[in-house]
Length: 495
Ligand code: BG6
Image (cartoon, rainbow, N blue to C red; front, side, top):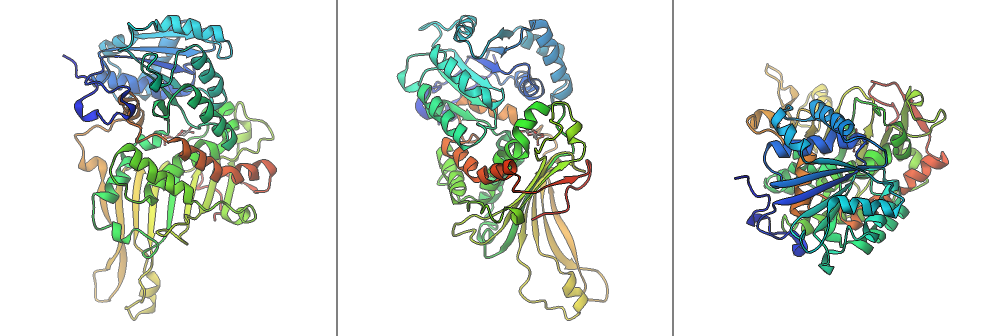
């Protein structure tokens, strides 16, 4: 007998929507099925969950897009996605199980009748289907979110949980949630018209990464760090997410997004929140989300007059030749921002967030740089000059782990000091434990109704509010745009 997806331990379920001892029937409806994300991430994640027997016994995957496609061509695309991107190798039996459950429906997002077709395909008729759970995943560009939510709402495919009028439904929004503050506000309002907040899952796959989840464990399962986790001992914090890949054929999407909407507004700010937040009252979703939101609320607004000094934006050379990119595009592919959190713990401490595409090395990490020793006790001037501050580095990916740089005596006659690393390597320590991919973890959390790793309404609004001057600065040309050579360490100018 296959494992039930819901166990008693999961009955943290907000609102009690999915609050059942077991969940045996679920349908995933993926909008934007012809897109990159569905092929690279969503189908491979569902495949891995299927292999690990973590999906409900009776699951279906209804893939949806605007194009007229045959199911066979979609299946071929999905299969190649699993072959290329899944952590488990393609196994014919498991793949056949997926094939038997995948369908494709063409939906014109703007036409209400299309949602009726979808409804027929899903066979939603009450009360017979009240046990089946429906998870709508919007993996389209954010510009389509509004019209899809409206279509789903008007057709009754989604209903507010508290009405208890339809089968249990949830909606997942791929990031970015909107294009800016105004569109995020409008989208939240519309979504709340048709659904309750407990049914809304604003995705940020970084929150699902093991090493990102480990930030809170590291901070709150170890008593030695908390006393020195503040402005008295830390001089600054650097959060970096460099990629060695370019835009990978996603020109049209990237022109709309740029690095600010694609990574800075969500992934980097969420990592920042986990590093900077206060200890939550408990690990319950709402307590954690409260604390993340408080960090966003305390972000000092970027001063439009200081943008030139505190922000570097750049584009890699060759970006303009990418398919789907305008020849005179001003879209930044690199951004570095110095920011401050105006609260008691962090007052006056700079956080530098940097991210870019097509750089030399893929590397996402947090560096907590400690204050220098107050007095150099080694008489020799050259030794004092060499003293380096302690740096705690949390490596999110690759080479996942944590290291601490300390000064140590260099063997020999002299009182010399050298920096060395105390190192923890995730993969070495947990060799036998395969790491679940972020999308697997998050899809399961959606099914279980656990919203801890999803942004709550005000989180996304605060994040958009914070990046608004950057988006305006790019548009108006107020922030100068540099260049960098693809495959390099990025632009020289940094805050
Ligand atoms: C996505 C962005 O959210 O994150 C991509 O849209 C980026 O542009 C990707 O490449 C990076 O994710 P990861 O998990 O590979 O670091």
